Length: 365
Image 1 (cartoon, rainbow, N blue to C red):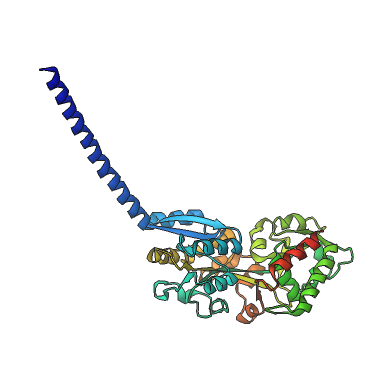
Image 2 (tube, rainbow, N blue to C red):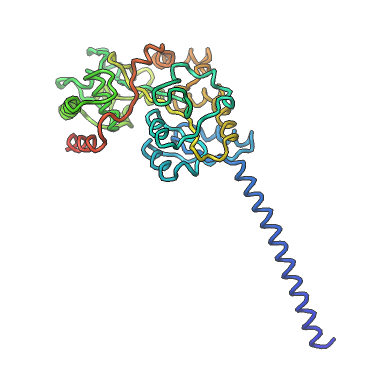
């Protein structure tokens, strides 16, 4: 074979090989793109608190349904609000805003109306958690879990000393008998102080804000620490046998179940409801409703309660066995009456943020 013929044959083979490779790449990439699209069609993007869904439960949902869950978390409602406002409701299919955050997101037009016909659990939700002011018809949100805030205390210490079911235990000078632990959350700090001073108020006048500020500055004299974590470290030391706390925090300290107590002050405690809601531009509503129905299952609710101790919004998770093993104080809170619930106030801003920040600087300095 002539040299020119050999070169021509090699060239033709090379050209054919290139085309074969190109066709293979086109077909392969096209299939992969289709797989990605199919995968994306079966995926939901969730932005929630870090301790609301157990990751093992998420995996069970994925295995059962074939729906992939992309889970992201936030530490505060403010972080959630910023993310939703920046994205204008794009990028997420399900979120878990607290009560007051629902009001803000509704006003911003960042929530999509829910379809009650696709939520099989609606009839199981505790009635007094529904139709709150932040969403009167539950058009945009549905309660998933809740917790109350009051006072945790060392039972052993207060066997020897008087204990009053009142915010006075935190806000009146203990005259050196002990020191208290106060929250480091500014909204909770102001809200609990206002509850002690004025009862249930939705807004503070200038005079009332000054009274709150003055009391918190005065209280600093007998505060050992401002924190929402490691409370048990202070409480079991007997040096600081009383603290502002949440029912969920105390409930998780099962190793101290016989030593730590918790009560809602007679003036009324604080409450927060964590809700599930769909952002206005969520893309996979049908998959989200499938996810919600799974997460509202009574057994799943019971598992989440056992792990995180937030109160589920569906009381039917509470079996006879659970009632027998549950701490009596927690059971009493879980089964409170509607009237007892209505004596609680929601944790929401009732003082301008810049003023709270200035107050915090004054207290810490």
